[in-house]
Length: 284
Image: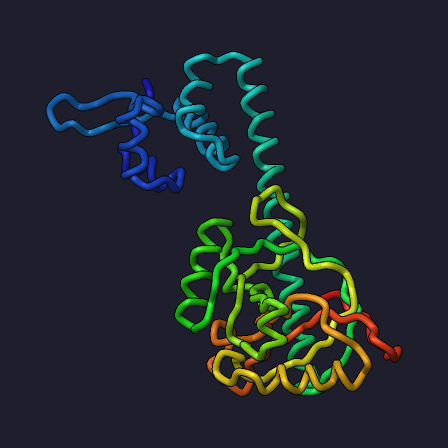
């Protein structure tokens, strides 16, 4: 004679919610050994334990209930092997995606540690930067509100949340606006990308020398000051601007509520006009 267990007892023995066991019954995945016709109580037997253990094992592997049901209905070795093989491939892909997330987190941690120890804020300098991949949306931006709207649009188009990335968001100011001192006439907004993508928004910031300056406040709140200082430096160094200025956010209100900790960077591509000037090299 089979030893009977109530649904509550099975729930405690196998650490499975009663609600889940009832659902398994409803979809014909794991049905009770016996149902009392008078009370409607469900009863299970020890012979069903292995069945339930198998369901739990396959669920732990992330296999869908419909596929688990097929395993029991078909009871075919080749089918079971193929199912596990597909699941292995899916898990491998998940691991690759998680490794990318881990690397992004490490990159931002490194950026943040570097930013907190920065000592040359407000001091113009030259840097030789490597080629950088970006996802860029061409759209005029003149106000903070327009900036936020453009960023939301870019995030939706690229399916990326840029605002959580330190140093991951920037805007570009055309050379004509730079030369005419229209320092809020941005032509585009971009998100840094760790690698090249096939997105139509994908482009690159070229590898070359940039005149740079770090700023402790939002450029949109104090236009011109840092640009004037940087342009004077470019002229003093015997250089000339050759393309769009780049402004990238390093630390803003998404990271800190202390405005004194805000950090932005302006980068202007330059070439030598008459005098050679030394530069530092950094991958950023």
